[in-house]
Image 1: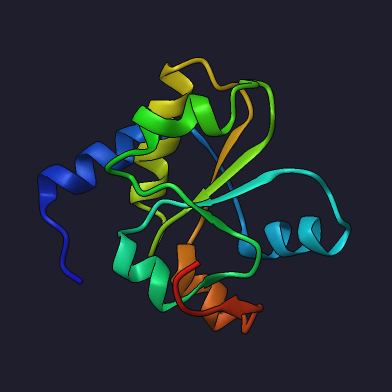
Image 2: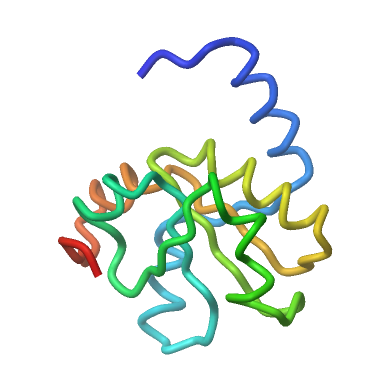
Length: 125
């Protein structure tokens, strides 16, 4: 997908303020049974198609509105992902502005997760 320059500039600015982690690091955390929130910020139809195993859905369009009722403790670890790592960086930046202190954006998003052949779930839930 060809992204517009204004969007890419916004993402680059957000990425300077947020922490990023690799899909391998996220998979390792899952394998170790670590407690953290894995949140898919993609659109509803993207989430229904497939998602990282164990992920919950809070789309980018509603995450700021609903995050505090879903994860009230602003110190809990949250890993966000999207299709390629752009929308999740923007969402992570917004959550940090809301006072969340342990937020990560997963580099490469679902594209990288699929390429690594990590477990997927399919269908609505």
